[in-house]
Picture 1 (tube, rainbow, N blue to C red):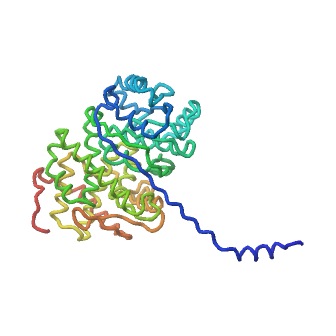
Picture 2 (picture 1 turned 90 degrees about the horizontal axis):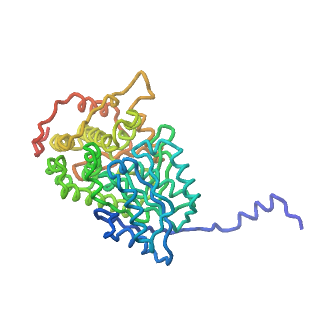
Picture 3 (picture 1 turned 60 degrees about the vertical axis):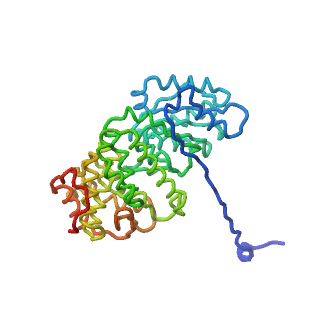
Length: 412
């Protein structure tokens, strides 16, 4: 019997919809240690051995060039470590050094070279990639790991404050493209994260300070007590007090991970992303300054801008706004750069294009987090550009606030 196309089409309408739901649970631990690659520190070997496989696990190590510069024996130590623990982990080739900093995310050849190495040493999905470096480099290596064989086990070993308290502990990877931050990327949970505090001892002042911006951010939107701790320990942060920075990193990481696990949207399928408080401006400023600004430095400016907007919109008090600005300045952040000013003669250089890019990146309606009070962020879907311009003017023209006037004052 011959069945016509029309009859087939009509018949297919009688079939019920097949509804599919795929629950997926990710488990990974964030560990804290010092001198990870000392032979008497078995942590890394134990993490790899815990997967239950009997044979040594194949692995490659990718190392940030900046880390190698400050730790010249690191590559040799990694090789010695894996030789010592060769019943658990087998290094397929000598550790590969790659460019660190934002340049790692701007050069497509970086991804190509990593995919080529993965292919050449024949890693499989049960192999491991050890990524050792700053947040930008971890983003790039994570993207390569997530896209080779649709996912190779990644162990992140962040070496900066920013990497250890924010970018290195989450589920996102990405590289920059078309002048946009993280235009290409994946959501892929790492197999594990290991924060080695010893790596922080060789950071320069800018990288030390930059990572604290993400702690200020998450404290402002989620934990007033944590913000108070940061605000009252700015001298200790500047003087690089080891115990204080460890406490800040731990609490910041804890708050980020709690949000990722419990927000109901770990892979950001909606239009809301509160952990990006201050980031629409930060990402735009990084691009406008040709990445002269570190990510954390740009985030600090973005936080100052959103906090000032919140004050001008009568959402937070003058004293709260002043305390936020003072805290950022006391840590050592500069809160104004010329690129903040709206370039009317060159729309391509306009800061506010960052709002459109932010909406495009998230999808759906524009969703910006501002402050209702210190410790609580709220979401808005419309912004007043005139208030943002006033906020920029305040950041540009306001005199420096006295370093030690961070106590609550009468409302303005």
